[in-house]
Image (cartoon, rainbow, N blue to C red):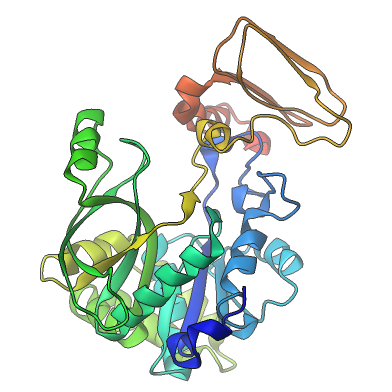
Amino acid sequence: MSPDPLGPADLADLHVIIPAGGAGTRLWPLSRAGRPKFLLDLTGSGRTLLQQTWDRVTQLVPPERVHVVTGPRHADAVREQLPELTSIFVEPSPRDSMPAIGLATAVVHQDHPGAVVASFAADHVISGADRFADAVVQAVRTARDGHVTTIGIAPRSPSTAFGYVESGAPLGVEGAPSARTVVRFVEKPDEETAKAYLRAGTFSWNAGMFVTRADVLLDHLARLQPTLHEGLRRIATAWSGPDRQAVLEQVWPTLTKIAIDHAVAEPVSLTGGIATVPGRFGWDDIGDFAALHDLGHDQTPSPDGDHTLWIDADGLVRARPGVTVAVVGIPGAVVVQTDDALLVTTLEHAQRVKEVPAALSAVGRGDLV
C-alpha cells in the first residue's frame, strides 16, 4: 500500500525505531546468539523477520526515517539484509529495551525536535497491512496529544506467554476513535487469570509496540530515570561529532539496564499518561516452536516436495534440505535439524527449549549456542 491516502500530516513527523536484539533461545538450534531469529526466514517467505519488518514500516515512512538498534555481533548482517538502511545504532552491549530505544529517541529528538517515534520489534510476524497502518496512524495522533501510546493485540486465546494491558475510558482524541487510557500493565498471568482477562474483554496482549512524541518520552525519563536520561543526553550530544564512539563506549556501560515497560510504561500508567489503541491485524512474536506451528509453518519449506512422513503423529519438523524425517506415534512432536545439532521435543515442552543453550554453555559448548 502507499502512505499517500493517509495524508501528509498524519505520519510526516514519524520516525520508526527497530530494536534488533535477543538470542531467541526458545528457537534453538535454528536461532543462535550469532544469528538470532530476526535474521532468519522462519516463515518461508523469502524475507527474514527483520526484512519483513523493514518492508512493513517503509510502507509508512521513507527509509531515512527508519532507525535500527542492534549489537556489534549483528551489525554487519543487519546492513547486508537492509541495503537501504541509513541509520544504525550499534550498542556496545545489551542494556535492555529502554537504553536502546532511548538512544535512538534522543538522537532523533536532537535533529528533529517535534518528532514522534514508534518502536516495533524486528522479530514479529504481522499480517494485514491496512489494519497495521490504521493502528499506527491512530497511535501517532494519540501520541501527539501527549500520551505514550501502546498498540495492544486482541488476544486469540488465554495465553500465559504474553503480558497484558487493561484499557479504560475512551480518550476522545480527534482522528483516533479507538484510543483509550491504560488502566494497568500486568505481567504474564497464570491460565485462570488469563481466562478471566479474556472474559472481561478489556485486556489486550502487550506486544511491546510504543508510539510517543520524542520529547514526552525523554521528559518521562528525566523524571523517572534521571541517571539514564543524562547518559543518553551525553551520547546524543556527541553523536554527530568525532567523539561519538569514545563517548558511547565510556557512557553506555553506566546506563541502567531496564525495559521500557518498567522504566516508563508502568509508572506513567499510574498517572493516566499511557494510552492504547487496538491492533486488529494478525500478530505473533514466534516465541517458540509451538507458536511457529500455530502459524501453519510446521515443516521445512522445500522445492522438492514433502520430506516429512507422519504416521499417527503430528507436530513440527525443520530439517536440512533433502533429508526425509519420519515421525511415528508422537502427537505434537518437534524435530529440528541443523548442520551441527538436532533437537527432539514436543509442542507441550516448547517453552523449555531455552534450557538447552544454558545447559550447553554450562558444559563448555558455547560453540553451539
